[in-house]
Image 1 (cartoon, helix red, strand yellow):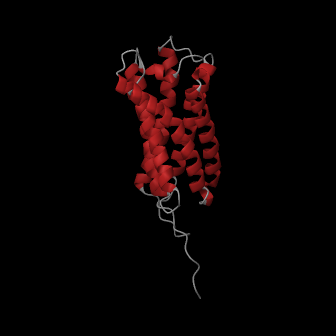
Image 2: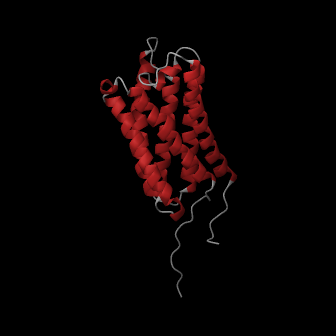
Length: 219
C-alpha cells in the first residue's frame, strides 16, 4: 500500500457522468442525420442543429456535453489538488464546458438579438482557447503522477489537435466552405468526446486527493 486514500463516491460519480455525457453527445449528433435530411455533413456546422426542427434536442446535447466537461473540471481539480497546475487545468475544463453550453443556448440565426449573437461568438472563441489551455495544463499536471502519464500525452495530443481544428474554422471559415462540416465534426464528435471519455474513466478510477510527496524520513 502506498498510503493513497480510497476513491470517493463524488469523484467516481463525476468521472462516470462526464463519460456518459460524451456518449449522449455523440449519439445525439449522429442521430440528427436521420431525423434532419437538410443537414449535409460536408457543409453544415453543428450549430445549425440548434435551429429548426428538433432544435431543443440539439440544444440539450450541447448543454449536457458542456455539463460533462464541468463535472470533469470539478473532479480533476479535486483529484489533482496537491499537484501544481491542477487549478488552472480544472478552470480550463470548466471554461470548455461553459463555452459548449453557450453555443447551445445562444444559436446563430436571423432572429438572434445582438447580445445573444455576441455571447455565441464569445463561446465560439472560448472553446478552442479552453481546449488549448487544458491540453497544456492538463498534460503538465497529469505527468506528475505515474498512473496518469499515458493519459497526459494522449490528452495533450487530443487537445492540441481539436483546438487547432476549431480555431482554424473560427478564424478562416471561408477557407473550409466545402469541408467545414467534416472538419468540425472530427473535432467535436470524435476528438472532444474521446478526450472527455478517457478523462472521465481515469477520474472514476482515481483516488482523491492525490498524495502529497513526502520528504525523506530522517534517521
